[in-house]
Length: 102
Image (cartoon, rainbow, N blue to C red; front, side, top):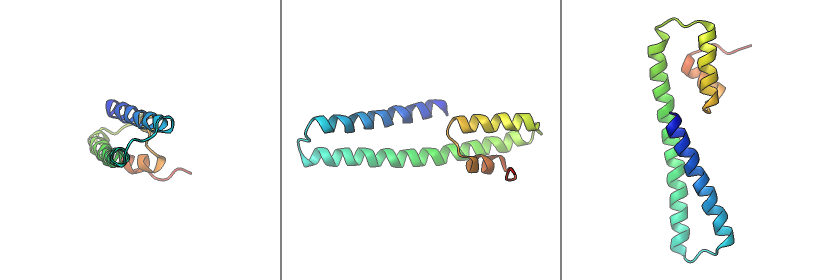
């Protein structure tokens, strides 16, 4: 998962760099604009699909891990690791099937 996250961040940085360069250098044609739009759209679709896939993979893995009767401390560690890679509290709660915290 970490490698995919790193790849997404590198791609995001590349898109930001391309956008910044376009401010300094005039766009030569409508074709270049269309290519940039297609690239940005493809990235957004890829990011959404990969995020959904990663959520499903984590949920499937957690189903297997859940059978091991983890301690509250171990569950907290898993939650923190998921949060560190960008999962929201709602996603973590769904993955871990936890009751809402007070």
